[in-house]
Image (tube, rainbow, N blue to C red; front, side):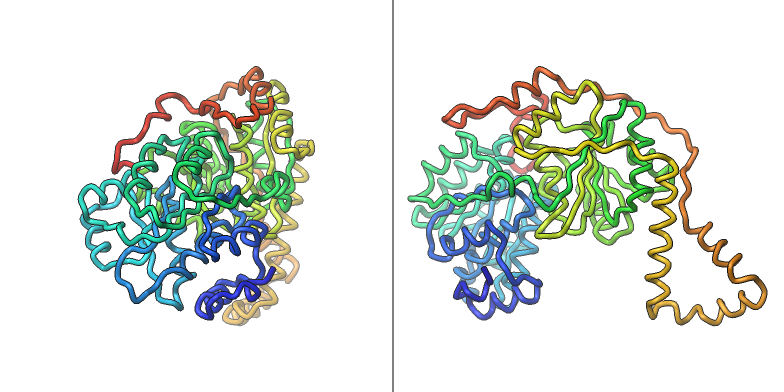
Length: 474
C-alpha cells in the first residue's frame, strides 16, 4: 500500500516523502486506516516494523497546530524511546508545524517546565516523569484527544502498570487510545478492556515478528572460546555497525574493554551509565565513530537504529522473547541483516526453546578459522580501497601519490598501503569472567505454550530489577 492512497493531508505526505517513505509496512497497512478513522487500536508489533509511523501519522493528522495546548500524549517505557518517538513525530509534523516534546527522568525538571510553557502539541514521556508534571500541574492534559501506549509489555516488565492506570484515569474519557505491544499478556489485555472503547486489533504475523529479512545462525562454542570467535567474525564480516549483546553489566564492561584492546572501535551500554554518558555513546555509534555497541537487554530497550547490519548474541538470551527483541535491531524495513548466537553445549536445549517460540529454525554455522578471518579483512579492505579510488574525495592526494611513485615501485607502495589498512588478528590476551549457562529446565518451561487465557509469566530478571521505579526516576 502506498501512502498516497490513504487520503493523507498534503503536509503529511510531503513530510513522508522527505523522510523517504513511500510504501506502508505490514503493521502500518493494517493500523493506519483504523487510526485515521479515529478508532481505538490494539497493535501487536515488534520494534523495527514501523509502528511509530503507524500511530504517529494519525496523531499528527488529528493535531491542530493553531491550538496551543497538548492534544496528544505518547507514553513510552524508556527515555531513549521517548526521544526517538518525539524525533520521528517532529519529522512527520515538520511541514504541518506540529511540535512534539520528549520528557523523561534524568533530565532537569525545571528545563522541562520551561519547554512545556512553550505549549507543545504532543508530549512523549516516560510514566514516572509524566506523573511528576501532572502532580505539579506543570502539564495540562484536559484537551488530550489521543493517547498512545508504546511498547506496553515493556512497561509491564518495568513495573509501570499502576502508573499507566493513573495516567489514563487523568485524561479525558472521550479520546482515541492506541496501544502497541510486541506481546499481549493478560495484564495488557485487561488494560485494553478497561480503558479502550471497542478497539480494533491489528497484528503482524509471528513469522514477521521474527524479522524475515534477518539471516539467523548459531555457533556452538565453549564459553572460554567465545571472545576469539567473536573477533574472527568481526574480521571476516567487517560489519558496518554491529550490536553485541551480553547478559550482565559486568559482561558488557569486560567485552567492550576487551574489544578495545584488540583494536576494535567499541563502546559499552549498560544501566550504570549516566544519561549524559548514554547519550554520548549513542551519538558516536550513530555517527559511525563507534562500530560495535556492546549492550545488555535492559540498556538496549527502546533503541531505534536503522543502520545495524549485524547482531551478535555473545550470551544466549534468558527469555525467547528477548531473542526477538535483540535480532529485531537488524533486518529492518526490508534491509538485510544477520544475527549470530553463541551457544555452549549445555545451552542447546534453550536454543530449541527459542526456535519453538519464534517458529523459525536457526541454522548451525561452523566456527570461522583464522585464515578465513584474515581473508575477510583483506577482501573488505580491497573493496573499500576500490570504492575510494572511484570517488572524488581523493583528488587532493593525486599530487602526493605521483611524487611517491617517482621514488617507489607502485606494487610495493600499494602493498605497504594494504599492510597498513588490513587489521591482522591481535595476540593481545584478554580474560572474561565466565557466565553460567542458562537453565535447561527453564528453557523447557519457556518452550511450553501459554494457557488459552494468555496468562502472564514472571519476568526472568532478578527481583531487584523488577522493583517498581519511583515516580520521576523512569
